[in-house]
Image 1 (tube, rainbow, N blue to C red):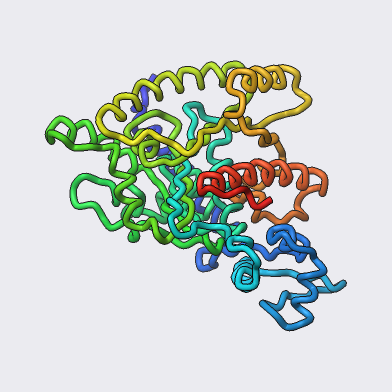
Image 2 (image 1 turned 180 degrees about the horizontal axis):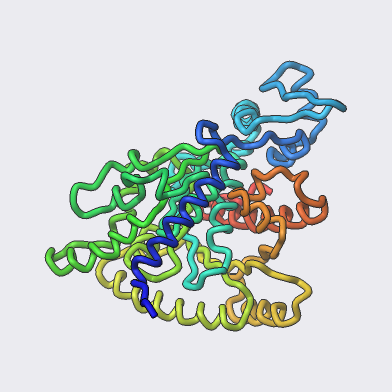
Length: 394
């Protein structure tokens, strides 16, 4: 029996899978096509803006603001750019600042939210992507950073790393120890107005490999300041940064946590997941204590646990949720992210629930999932506003 070399076998499988994934992407989005976000109904836009649909109709009839596309039956559709233009117009006439453009004002600090978990399958990337997109739709200037070498956050925004980033272009380029690139060079525009992204790929692992060598060779080198220093160069351009961290507690994650102003921990309410989270918290506490002793800033505006992939009819899950609420109190978000076929089915086409065509799902399935995500994201938005000394908008 001939024994195969595992490195060659794995490499062959990776190459074949990558080629098939690229073919799948080209089938969904042709190579020369620019990925665009769908248009939104007037009802969706009214909900996003916090106004009545009739008010949008009046603005249209009066010739004020962008004119919607009108389809059969009088159905009115707005592009994402139209929504932003409406926000800008309405903000000028608002009685209080931030009504329609709720981002930073003079003196407000950049919000840097790290989304973390030590165990895969907790919904970390799904949470980070939907949060970043919803904040952008709500009028915030958002930067999403994919810090996970597996790059699932990037894939949801149209990037296949081995094809789209063959020459780098990840955060590693901006935080490397030797000749780092300017942060603005690794930032890419997305098809969401107000949402930029720093995509990820396997290059990020180089930071994990470089750091021990640098720490050993250079006295006084502080690895945990690399991300915060890179963000400081572009912080005036954004209101919120959402970082999708890798599912391990390495140098990348610790550097992200040192740069963070807030931490969102995703938790699947199963015993094994909660046990894994316990180990993660113990390691995080110990390692970040060392970082704090070395001068790192470990103060946060808030830290919350988010229950993800929750099934309300599951008795053991309900027990686990009750256990977590009794243990951590207000540190657990009031709202949960429900497990939904709508979210997983949207992921097949590398889309989120905010961009997928809702007609692809039954109305009840789609609206139930969307209501859950919106409730979570609006609760996080209220925490952001609270960190700036303001009450949530709704």
